Image (cartoon, rainbow, N blue to C red; front, side, top):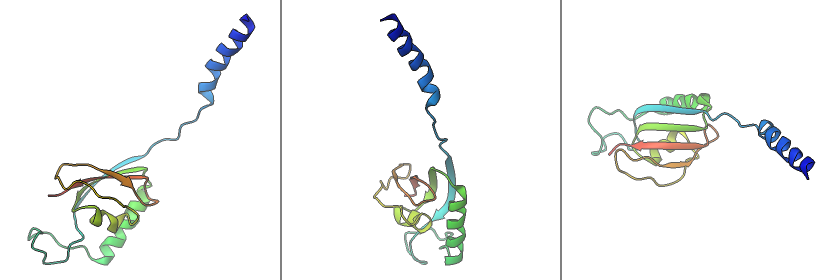
Length: 118
């Protein structure tokens, strides 16, 4: 019985060393008014420029280069705008200005946290 207990104690000490955890890479990004709205939309402040296709392509490249598991994206107009950069981002989120929501995102990250502008 004592040898069984010693074997169990030894296994309990050695097993945690066998477990391997992968690092979790987090990124934050203040994207400064990313919107899916059309130019001239009355809901946009006058000083907000709508991004051009080349700008969106460069932002998508940057998002892929982040290679983050979780991206906290600030300054977006909603999930539709986030989908311009993370095309596989589904889901509804709260429209409150300081809210956060998670959803599955593209291969560039596993989760996306949005801080949505009012």
